[in-house]
Image (cartoon, rainbow, N blue to C red; front, side, top):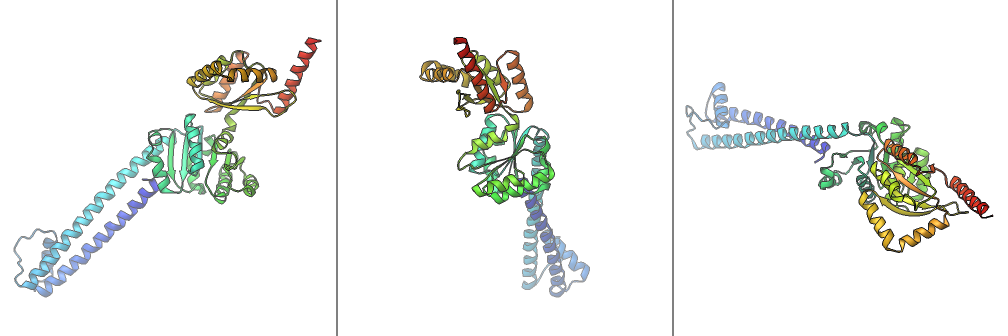
Length: 388
């Protein structure tokens, strides 16, 4: 159950307690009037008899004699038992809900306190699921917010979500500045908007830009004509999942922590280069080969996240046609290639670059395709001059 539904339940329980107390008041009035009319008691005795009958004490000092008096006493006693039981059960449920709300709030506060360098995922559906899985694979901290209570409850049933201290799920309206202000946006890596409504995504972008002008925002666009509108509203990147998919949303979102490492020779020190990247808990998303005279590189997605990925790649590299293919592309590209690397934060990326440079395993960082094209041209000219 979400915090919002817990609060609503508490309010309902408070209302039911008030209704129960009003019913007790009505029952006392009924008992007093009935005792005066039917049993000919004075006001004090009537009130006394009503209370002990409702409480089922029954001292026996006042005894109904006629059938009508006995029926009246029975109705008074049964109604009293039912209403009191109703009030006590409601109070018990109210106390239980208060404890549940406090526990959940403490758990949320603890997770929120640890949220730095996190991502805020607004909207959890088919595309949001892909993005969240990519973030979890890379051990990123994530706040997931969706306005559908059932969606969040279903998500919380998954063990890898409920037991993950780095994942915080919240039922709420992402267009509300009051709610989003709590998510430490300025300390986050960025926001990823994956709701199925372009209008909702547009409102979220506008709301976020008001409270955090420098936030990195990546938005999904269901319709092509809305891409420009989302850009104009302030989104840094707009992706159409129908053509790109959830993985592109993730890669665009991590752009502040995404770097292109360019080197001249892919075959030498490959294992050492990749090991340095993985050691700092970064991920090699892809390898790019840059061919002479062609500005756009040839891209191979590899997704190295752990040492076992590297081992598997190296085993495959030696035992299949991949080795021949890579060697051929290395020859054609004159050995100039790039690794696209993502990291949990900017510090991890900086550490990778620093160590690669210390070991002479990097030629350039975040070079453009045009700069690499010129580098390739210079390498080719150098080779031709050496032959002459």
